[in-house]
Amino acid sequence: MPFTNAYPISSTNPRGKLYKHSSAADIPKKDSIRLISEFITNGSGRISREELLNMDYFLSILWSDGKKPLFDFFGYSLDDKTNFKSNVGIRAFTIRDGIWAMPEELTCGEGIILLGEEEKLRRNCRDLTRYLDRMFYDINWVNRLLNFAP
Image 1 (cartoon, rainbow, N blue to C red):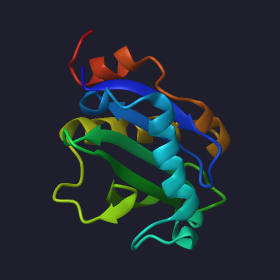
Image 2 (image 1 turned 45 degrees about the vertical axis):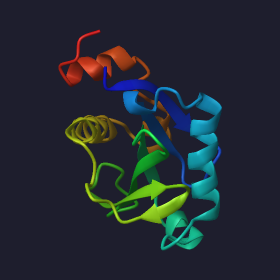
Image 3 (image 1 turned 180 degrees about the horizontal axis):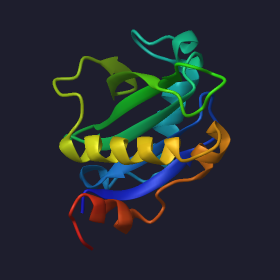
């Protein structure tokens, strides 16, 4: 099963969603949320706090290389702030040890499918608040999208 959990990250600016990949299953929920929240709050490396504040929201996938937790981070900026369903610009990078890292890969195929489903969901919501309040909490449903039936 590729994804084990989904968490709203609502105490940061920007707000976002965190999906935990099965490779990071041993990382506790509180640590998962703390690590991404610290990055959002402080910025790090080449990504400044100001750059993060210019993003409207983010999606992130937590995974592990067997040694350290990593985040595939996708920061979204609406092209037209008056039209929530407008196209978005996306900044993508990897966070390793809380610091921006040049990714060898953007994300995995499972991550791309998840991002596509999230974009479909966003375009069916009226506004950012409603979108961020809606998540794929049924992680089995997400995994079925990826052809991994529970």
